[in-house]
Image (cartoon, rainbow, N blue to C red; front, side, top):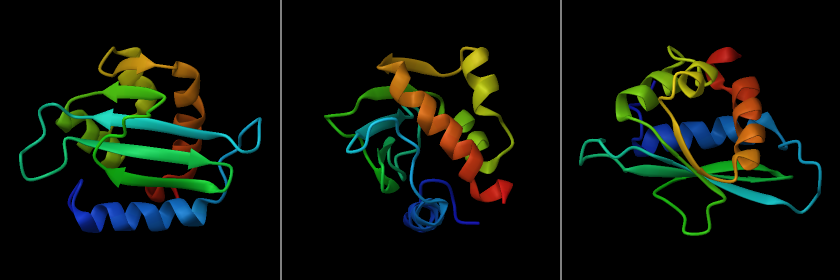
Length: 122
């Protein structure tokens, strides 16, 4: 498996997201952007990534997006554990290890859909 937040990691995740199919939205034509930010990440990797979700599917890009609907802030080590499947997103939120700004309703479809389509769960 590629190193977390490396270009190979982004490429692999986007391939998995393509295979996962459409994101289930209540209204067609919706676009949600959720930024995951890691203030303590090493200088060798991006400090953030942006998930863009549409009814056609989802993609992830390094960096943050100014038009994000929500921002999740967590430590780099927690993000690495979440990515590796050794830490559950529900537990992270419940334990207060994820700080949320913006429209929390935009995050719910992302978390549910990602847990269902995560490459490690297949």
